[in-house]
Amino acid sequence: MKKSLIALAVIAASGAAMAQSSVTLYGLVDMYVGSVKTGNGTTSLRQTKVESGLVNTSRFGLKGTEDLGNGLAANFVLEQGIAADTGAAKTATLLVAPAAGTSFAFSRQAWVGLSGSFGSTRIGLTPTPFDDVSGQYDAVFDSGLSPMNSVFASANSYLVRPGNTIAYYTPNLSGFSASASYSLGENKTAAVNAGSVYSLALAYANGPIGVSLGYQNEKVDSSALARKYVRLGGSYDFGAAKLYANYGRAENYEFSSKATLSGAKASDYQVGVDVPVGAALTLSASYAQSKDNATAGNDKRKGFGLGAKYALSKRTALYGGYEADNSKVSGTTTLKHDLFAVGVQHRF
Image (cartoon, rainbow, N blue to C red; front, top):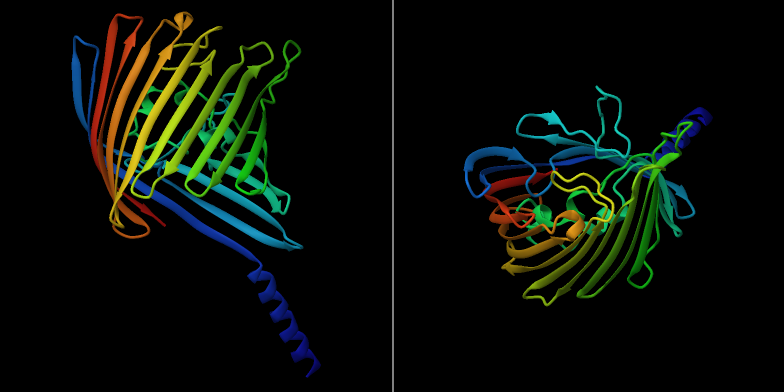
C-alpha cells in the first residue's frame, strides 16, 4: 500500500513538473510566383520566378520555456531559415565570417535566457534591438513588396544577427520599453582588438500610437571603420486606416556595390498606410526615398509598393502586389527594378 502511494506521488510530481515546461515546434512556409524586371536604362531583362519568403522568410524552429518558480522562467529558441522553393538551408551573415564550408543548423536564432519581473535576457544568436525597430513600422507587410527594403540604406546594410550576442529587454512600463545588445567578434589578434556590435532601442506603444527609436554600431575589428545606423519609426491607428512613417540614417555604410566608405552618409524617408477592408482583407501602400551625400556619390533612390493580404484562416493567407524602384547612380545611370507577385503563406 505504501509503495502504491509513493508511486502515485512520483507520478503526480512528474506531471506537475511537465506542466511547468513546454516545447513547441513552429514555423511558416511562404511561397510566391513573381515577374521581376531589371534594367539600366539601355537594356532590361524580365524573368518569371518561383521563390520563397517574399513576406516572411520560410522557417521552422523549436521554442520552449520552463517555469522556475517565483515568476522566473528559462527560455530558448532554435530556428532555421529555409528556401522553400529548393529546400536549401539559409545561412547566417555574422559580424566575423565563419570558416569556409561552415554549415548552420539554426541560422536565424539559437539562444537561451531567463525572464521575470526584471525583463528578459538572451545569450546566443538573436536579432538585434535595431532590427526589431527596422521593420516594425514598414507598410506593405514589411515584405519584398515594400520599397523600403529596396531603397533604404539603413534597411539593407546592417547586421541583423551578428552572433555571440548578449541581449536584455526591459518589461513594459506604462507603454514604454527598451532593449540593448552587445555582440562579440571574438577575433582579437596581436595586432588588433576584437570587433563588436552594440545595438539599442527605445519604444512606446499605447492605444493607437506607436513610436520606436533604434541605433546600431558595428566594427569588424578595432582597426575597422564603424558603421552606424539610426532608425525612427512610428504609426497611428485611426481604425479605418493605420498610418506609418520612417526616418533612417546610415553612416560609413555598405549598400549595393558600395564598399564601406569613411564619411558616406544616407538619409532615408518612408510613408505608408494599411487599410483593413472587412475582417479578412488588408490593402497597403508605401512610398520611400533615400539620398546619399557627396562622399557616397550623391546617389538617389526612390520607389513605391502596393499590396493586399487576404486571411483564409488564422494560419493561412493569400497575398499579392507590385513594387517598383529606381536608383540614379552618380547622377548618370538609372537602375530600374520592378516586381509583380502573388503568393501564399501558411504558419504552423
